[in-house]
Length: 134
Image (tube, rainbow, N blue to C red; front, side, top):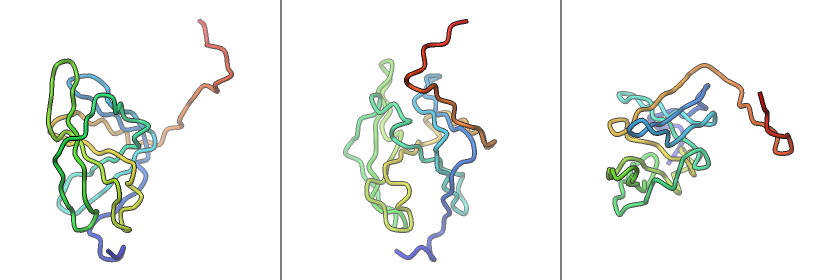
């Protein structure tokens, strides 16, 4: 598919994006991508490294978008609660959406998505630093 005809834009989300399922954080990223498509709410794609993949299981559902490609779907299993098709991922998206490969998006009806659109630095303690004690 040609990039020129895709009906969406993808850009880095400027701030931090958190995803909560029944009050439990299942994803937190300062590296999320925001996909804007005419007529739809924004969709945030979070790198898998920032998603608790241990609570997600790939299921047999798949869907196809003519612009992005074939999506794989996930079921969430947390605290004895199971919800089918809570998230999806494009493993090998079409060229116009290649940047979302390796990212996971969540269905807003099943989770709470907190998107802070204010740019924030990612603060990480270097691995060799001792723990901070008050």
